[in-house]
Image (cartoon, rainbow, N blue to C red; front, top):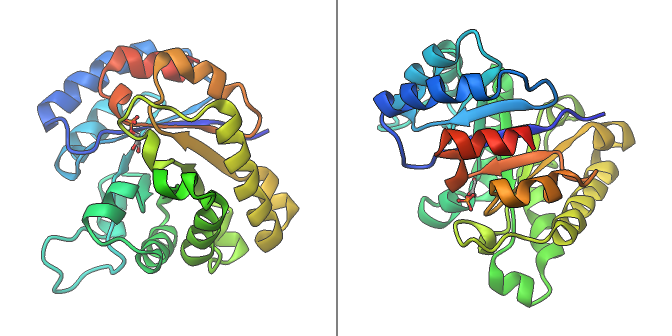
Length: 249
Ligand code: 13P
């Protein structure tokens, strides 16, 4: 059985102080949870506060991006060993907002994922189609090219430590979530690609999370699907009570 992952992507929200307050509120609300791994991903500068406040709880901490080299003359970047050194365990890679606004490509996703794995960070690699791509019947082709470019070049041992997040771009921040059927179809498509490239054992063990307007009131229906191994939550992860409700779903 795959242990679900419920991860909160805070995007550009919450100071270090607000992060401490959030975790102090969240920790008791998810204390009894044994069936899911819980991850919060604050902005870089709030990571130390999150790691300190999460200590002693089951909550783990992730970054929202990482650079692919360890060090060098790369103004503004943060490396995987630097994240690991402060106690960060996870990293989101290739989020659609990074693809849209910051020039993320399949090639950079692949380099960042490789770097994260080499350092021992657990990557959550995001894929997903835009609205016009879905309407043009291109969802499968988009997912396939994101998988081929960003992930297929990993070794099986590397890929076994990757989680994928399927995030249809049209569902992010819009309140328009994919139906469980739509998510299952995309997850099954991705799992078939994983099986073809990495074999049945790895495909069966791979965690594919759904992201895009996951809220306390739709989380249970999504997470009840065998194909859906967790959630990557944006807006609803900013409130401890609503994030805890999703974890406990
Ligand atoms: P929302 O949950 O706000 O739609 O954001 C989803 C997302 O982008 C998570 O990475």
